[in-house]
Image (tube, rainbow, N blue to C red; front, side, top):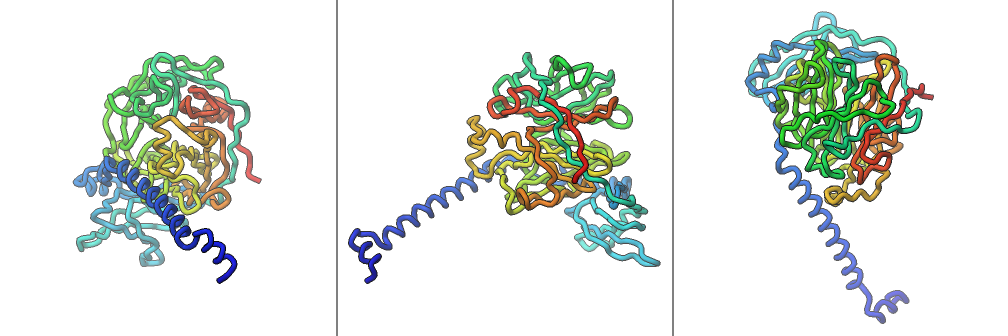
Length: 454
């Protein structure tokens, strides 16, 4: 018997002690795993998904014929977009070479990113064996050269911009725009609490003649009060000077306005988005008659940002995941961690900003419901990714392991505003009063500069 074995035998310790430790560790692991499974199943239970949420099944083929192939071009790339029917078809993308057509890719959804010039066509291949048919043809000519890379950085202190008092006590996710009269408007999440997300059912509105407003914005009547949750509004102006507002969660709400002040025709534009935990929609026009909608989402485990495509601002179809998280990513909450996506095109290069919140373990969601945020500095963690196109920002695998990650900012639910009259840029931050550290319920604004990358 060895000396160690002798001592263990004399004290009554041996394999029984080691087995007890292992049982405790195993029990803890099982409890953690059970908690993860139960919480995720509970949260996902009401979130039904269906690709045809925005475009009825019978409308797909007529819209396919109407839209055909639409092209967006940039420096070094071109994108082919079309109406897809992924339940019934797959798509073969071909490029003309000499007198023949060569296959250059396959797609399930209505999206293909091309890098070579030429004539392309999209072929619909029916899953039930029906004859293959042509969706459309398009001539593609990517722009020459490459877009320069810049790094966005705050260029001054945060200044208070707006905090409601009559219709709410704080602002979280928000949007900023100029109405038809030229006044600046801020529309944002609020409630008469210190940050109870279940009470957020309309948007507070701030107005000012200037931006940034030297004395802050004045509060006016709230909007979008339809008796259900109202999160993360985003407003864009179309070519006909009409205003369009989108918001969430879990489904896409939509309203229109002729002046950006009075909103009408509220409807649910997308009843059941393609992936779970859809929220925080942001819309970017990429070409005349073509828009992309970015949204927070989650796959089987990892968080991600989804993108939807529209040719009329009325119907939307999922076309891909421009940013996904993978092994090494620090946060993958049961209800997604890639919040408040915002895409900017600056000098022909694209920048995707997300607020990287909500830790992975299941108890993080329970703590949020109890208004507990253990690491309050992480509430202001904004990540910015870059790409030469708005369709693919790569994979986030954590700090130092993500090629497209450009920089990080201290901000929450950041919005990026370009002042059209003086070509100046600004960034905002906001958040729940009990969690935010940069603000106390108000939206704050700071100048933003773009530094050439070294």
